[in-house]
Amino acid sequence: MLLDKPIPIGFILNKVKTELLLTSLYVIAIEILDEIYQVKGIFIPVAIPAILGTTISLILGFRLNQAYDRWWEARKIWGSIVNDSRTLLRQSLSFLPDDLRTTTVNEIKNLQIAWCYALARSLKGQEQQDIQRYLNEEQLSLVTSAGHIPNSLLHLQSEILENCRKKGHLTDFQHMLTEQTITRLCDAMGRSERIANTVFPKTYSKVVEFLLYIFIILLPFGLIEYLGYLVGTLLILFTIPFFLLEKSAIHLQDPFKGYQTDVPVFKISETIENNLNKMVNPESPVISRQKQEKYFIL
Image (cartoon, rainbow, N blue to C red; front, side, top):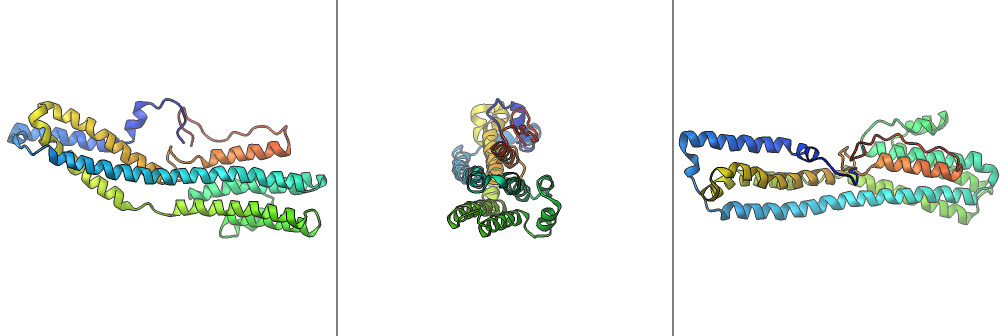
């Protein structure tokens, strides 16, 4: 996730280096062909590239808005996961007897932390590398043999709370409240997976890309009469915003794919881990495992 710090211009331009290279090669090709065939003598009405530019702007605006909606929904989902993780542990601490604090409550805490990391890995399509820190051998064997590790971890928590109800450690009403919290966590998991597994329509990308390159091809011949040899430089400057907006939309539409603009699910999971540890033991050290650059977190 990008941080609220100054971002170097090189980092921004690096996102569109391929497109800028192709545009620069096109400008050079026009200059070479002009020396041989005087192609700059070709002139088209400037209204033609202007209409294309307007069309591209409208499509890009719509696409960027839709992509941001997906990113913002993902961020809200993980915000709710933070709240419900704290709620689940607070309910466990409040409802369960003090003598279960070092056993059952601690087990629920570890399962919830493991669930957060497991869901984060699952959304990114990565191998599970974190859950073994929080589970015993029996639990680890049980969840890894299941087809869906995050769902299995929630099921384990439900079983623990159901056993507590049967033993009289939880009233029916208290058990219902904890189950409602787990249900909200399950809903958040499903919404996150829907975003991660739903492919953003490729039509937008292809249409914008096609129109953008036609715009680049035609623009020099619409401006050459007015700008002369400045056309090449201005063509690059004109197209940089379009390329950057297109790249921004591509990154925002997939908030779990490993871009710097991703929802920082591992950092959020780390925050949840620290919060839950402090709730059980205020003396717990603050954990920091996530790599942080000057202006983004991976």
